Image (cartoon, rainbow, N blue to C red; front, top):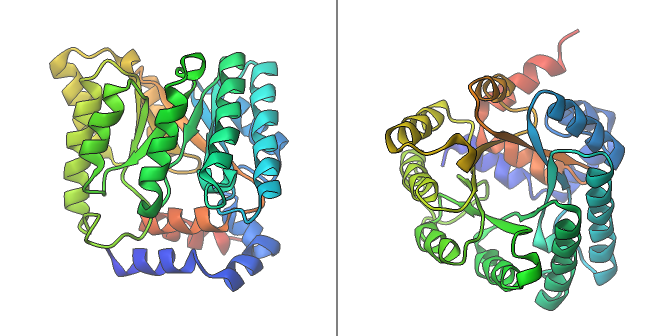
Length: 308
């Protein structure tokens, strides 16, 4: 892990800096590249604009680690409103959520109840709920909860989960989820993890990502490959061409504000692309992890922040 990445991940946990950034004009200027806005309407406008470009969307109401059951229910209500709005506006969109935002650290039963009701709502409206993966402390609890909800016949098509290629355990987790027919979004990983559980070197993470992506593509389940790495994109293109895999069998996924040129190029080439669109007032941890992931994001912000 590079020094710069370590610094930004450490800063993502700074409460004083978070308090300042989320309430300041400077913070609003900084986050505009990666955050769709503060409100549901802001997010829906961005979703409509992306859909007009042939790009699907997953909407994420930012927030994590709530401290009470009431907070968890308030967070869930935003998602219920999103699911209704997606259906009413006929958007090509679904939703992504974090289980700590749904009360997982207060009670696994609470989080399962809330996530299960959201999956039911998504099923009824023809949408989908993706459960984001958080740090490795929560991997088992997250996967167990998703598997239990997915086992309910009435909602099994409406819930999926994220796996992180930098964790040593992810290969076994892929096999477990594929055996149950659960849709996976594969990403590299954005949290600070010890070398005991995750590869510290980018080259090793990339190698594992490619290995796992090929396993997903060879399966019968529709998955999302979340990457901005052109080398990995090229490898995926080559792999599906050599195996005769239909482009409708998977989608590339990317982050709002990152590699928009690559997003548009993939759409022009006939690939499915979905963009992860975050919104809300609690944007600071997400924003800092985006800077940690890709140093080019820091340079972009520096150039645009001081542009007259």
